Image 1 (spheres, rainbow, N blue to C red):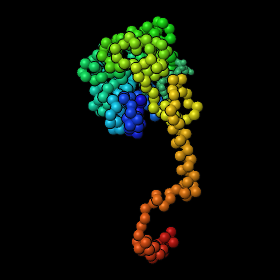
Image 2: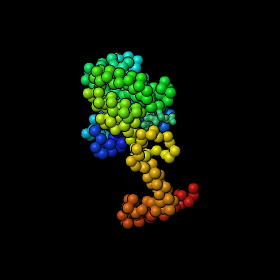
Image 3: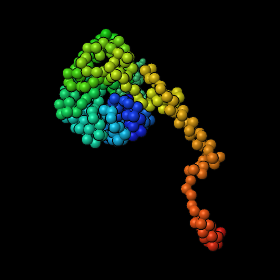
Image 4: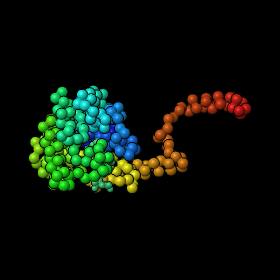
Length: 270
Ligand SMILES: Nc1nc(=O)c2c([nH]1)NC[C@@H]1CN(c3ccc(C(=O)N[C@@H](CCC(=O)O)C(=O)O)cc3)CN21
Ligand SMILES: CC(C)C(=O)C(=O)O
Ligand SMILES: [Mg+2]
């Protein structure tokens, strides 16, 4: 499950999630951005710290944002160290295939677990032609398998397969030693991940939702109901009721009223 702040980390943990990912999808679901590419390492770190404070038992993973790991393996290692030290997460995730194998080897060799991510890699959406399903031809499915093997050999503890035809994801899962985590990749993966805000239905009606999202609640509607009720209560003065207020002793109140009477000249002049 993804999380992006203290309460979303807490609820995922208390809900029994095995792993919690501070995904760069928070750009879109929590910050209102058009894609994930505007989010910087410092932004993610801020959210990682908040999530980590809410998580007691789940394994926490931070998504390395675009620009924090591609330039060189050295840069990727120092970004990963910051994720662990400043972000307080336990592992990092990065997007990409065989071209990132040397980078992943370096990060895992210093004892930082790495979750791979192939298929639809949103940070590369401009070169993928948008948020598109991947691995739909024999050639592209076989490229996915090549990438999966390279990531496994580089030391990834697991792989995210995003927006891949279910049979392709299932076949790749069968051939790997490490578990796969699917999102839009069918139930033949070892595990699943969803963006928390999507599965909770905490978004306004009409927003585009990937086909793979199953909505388990309608938090946005619930919240809106509460807003409307609050507005009505404030206008009708039903809120705050007596139980929401602080008392004062009758003696003190009486004395205050006396003082006000004596001082009435002061404020009647104004
Ligand atoms: N809220 C949210 N949930 C996500 O799961 C998510 C994000 N944001 N942002 C980053 C990526 C983008 N995601 C997506 C988006 C679309 C499809 C999808 O089904 N694409 C269709 C085409 C859609 C269209 O262009 O109309 C496809 O058939 O490829 C899949 C994953 C998943 N990720
Ligand atoms: C959906 C997961 C895999 C992700 O990368 C994210 O939330 O950013
Ligand atoms: Mg991501």
